[in-house]
Length: 495
Ligand code: PNW
Image (cartoon, rainbow, N blue to C red):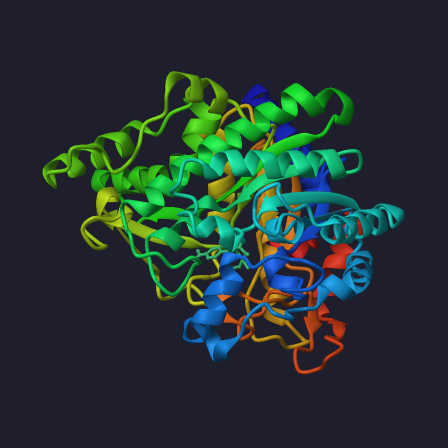
């Protein structure tokens, strides 16, 4: 009896000790964890035709079709960061960012997309940005492609044309040669699952080509090949001297089974494979598409009477090149949706191929972006999913953030960041998920693509009515500044 009590008491004591130990660190970022913020060229730079920049597919689409965007907004001026990048660096300093993830506009450097014209003014601009960041102790992280294909390359078909992979490799080489002495973090592509929809739908994504279930798969195939080639190029010609890291950024919701049934769990798996696995499986697993994707698209293509699958196949050589072609897993995560088996989308389409219906729980708080519901627990589950499915690759959250209408007292953003960061730290400190960095989207309000300037993601407000494009810190900027400087998320978000 006494012995039993002693064991019980010592067990309680041990539990207490463990609790105390984990409590003291649960809300802290591990040593060396990278904290920063992100933007993308078309969303902030403006100067769309200045100093030799070529037209890209977003310039083209929004000029031709102002009706595709909210109030006819476009990126002609945006935040004018082409001229005001020093103010962006000040904003980054304001939140204590250690890293700035920004993208290079391909057509600012190569106006035709090819090497016939190399625009020195474009190279100078990014040198200025990079040098100013480094002078201020902020590390540059460069996205090579955040959706802005040179229009000249769209005239020859864009991403569905397999040759575009070679153009991309040549562009990447220019970036390594010019910036690789100072840039140590490279991301080839931002969110392929989103930008390939520019080849499957009209009005949301450039170049707005209506070829669902075909164009988006062909585009995916080219960019995955391009990614593999750029990684090998870095390995073979730059890594030894530049010693940086090369990866890709993929995005996905957390897909929660709508009901606790086997069918819904299978739908969850299919949804992940069609949205994330389509890219992640070739790169992080075995050089090829997920089996369920291969099988379903092949079967549907056959049933439609086609002589070939709508989803192309990699050669053995390509598989070798693609498999393992990333030093890290870049993840953009914002929200959660519910999934169940069923038919959605036109015939053909990726949606119909997946056999999954996606929807939201209406009780989840919605932001000013209709697709972005605030579901912090989904973030933790997603980080665990990625860590389990794609083992051996450290994860960096390259985007996470909240949409409102631009108010300075942005309490909705504060509670989003507080609760999402808490869930991320639970994944790291309790579940043991290897996350090594986090980039908030975004440091400044910017052009939210087809939503124009109506949907705002910034920690700093930008006054789009003023020619100065004045940047003003929101309440969330000081909230994030405290977190970034103290490397601690306030306890209250862990309740
Ligand atoms: C990302 N969705 O896009 C992009 O990388 C950014 O350029 C963008 O500004 C940011 O997130 C906020 O939208 C997304 O529909 C676009 O789920 C759409 C979705 C997710 C991310």
